[in-house]
Image (cartoon, rainbow, N blue to C red; front, side):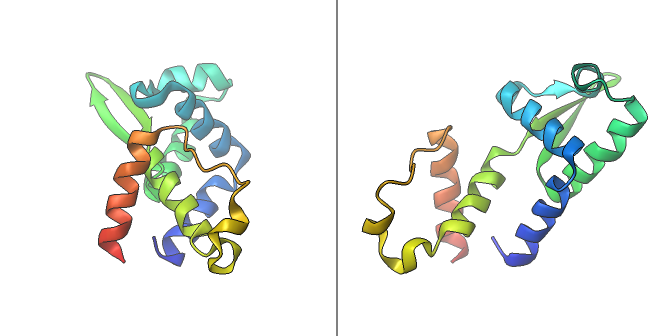
Length: 123
C-alpha cells in the first residue's frame, strides 16, 4: 500500500456514518448487506446512505454487486489488513521482539494470508 492509498482510506473513514456503515458490514462478513438493510439497521435515510456508500466504494473499502433491483455491499477486509500492515511495517524500529506483546492474530487469518502474498508482490 502506498501513502496516498492509505490517506484515501482514512479520509473515507473520517466520517462517523461511514465508520458505522463499514463496521456494520464487517460484522456481516462476506455475506454483506443490501443497501436498504444497512439504511434500516443504522436508521439512515437511503439518499444520505447512498452518498456515504459511494465514498466507501471509491476508497475501495467496500465492493458492490447488483442483485436484481438491490445492491449488496461487502467489506473489503483485505484492504484494511493491508492498511494495518502498512501502518505497522516498521513497528518498533525493525526490532520485532520489542513488539511481542502486540496482538498479531488477525480476525480473518485466511484474508491476512492473501494480503501478505499481495504485499510481498508489491514490494
